[in-house]
Length: 304
Image (cartoon, rainbow, N blue to C red; front, top):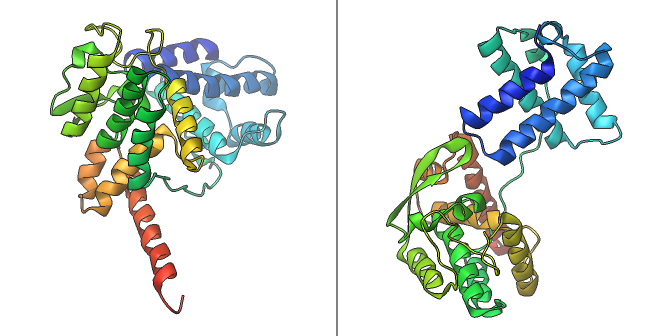
């Protein structure tokens, strides 16, 4: 029987090469399942193989989840749910590709999570962040770059990884941009003229040649501008503007969706623009809008 570690390697190769998952996603899945298999090696008295995985009982999986909750590196409920989802994905692959079946493990339920609402920035805050990026850049071209990046996130609802994946081959940015999102799924996003103009201005001022294969957004020394740099940029701007810690690059994507919804956009259209697989994910933005209406009611009603 094939050893579990070999099956894990085959599965991660499948995620990377066939499912086209991003490197970060593959590493997260691999990390969660590798931790599970390591636990089983001690729990079962040796490295499991395909037969042992097929014969695993619900109590064995529950023992692992309890260990992750209470062990030396205790995980929060959300992380435990993510680990359980990774294990289930691994088992689905084993059943399809290797005939390893274990329906009993479906009986195991993860912790019940309280759904957290997206925390977008306001329209005014989004404008202020972009203006502050230009004003506070360490160099004029870098301020223009920062403003172009934030404008793109807010105007098109891109994930930071999607914006930073753009290259010189995407220039000049079209009226409609084709974006490769999570799992390699493509979607089409219209671009406002303000976003295209902001990027064009940055390209004109950038001291580095942005060729077809090179990254569009460049760091101070010419390398690729990284997600960590974007996080640091937003942290500096939000502190300067007195915004909460929730004002991250992703909060601009949330703002894109929330502000479209508030101005009458169709929920399914927003789902397509964001690249959400499930409409229920997009529906969380209706809760944000309802919460805002309730807050306004409580502030304004004389009997509240």
